[in-house]
Length: 254
Image: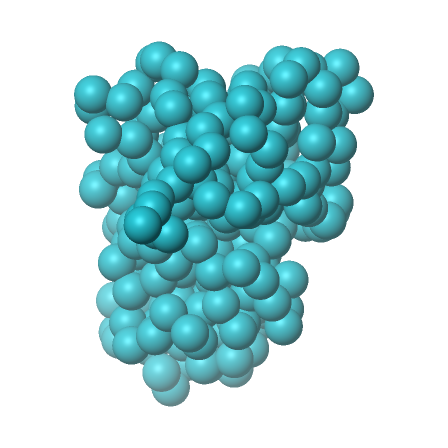
């Protein structure tokens, strides 16, 4: 009696080199054979091979453009490209909703330092060190935020539209990745958000905050800003030049 679990159909997949980070070394940069039963969606077939759908920018089957809802057929030849890659097919079909005019983010628990750097540039970046994956997905869907994560499995959540798996473990390299992935250069507003809570900064007169200042701060500094959300007070202290240098590096036009 034949084994009903045997996968009787095959399709071949070629993933763009930019997506190779998600594949085992032995499966990179080559055409891969995928075995399946029935007619799964191409989206499910891609994710079964380890590629989150949020990282896919265009699809082609047998040389023609398809969407995520295409049902895989026996013998199909599939090409999969990244979000920012040049399409390998004429007139690729849109795979998700159009990106917003201004990106907003929600970050997982591994990306606290990146959250602060994004806020330094004025990006709306939600972060908590006790977020559960379920909460991150809910916030992303409810508020239209792109998910930034070090856990690639999180990006497999079916309802997510926009997200990115951050490759590096170095916060400044992570920042460069996110700027490149979401085309943030020239679209930031440095020093406009609270590094601690993501609230919006507001200028306050020195006279209004005198009682909160240490003697040396009161003597040497004249401009102050307060977070409208958490009340934290900011001024251009000794570390400010370093922050300015960092901002200039990551906000200068390409």
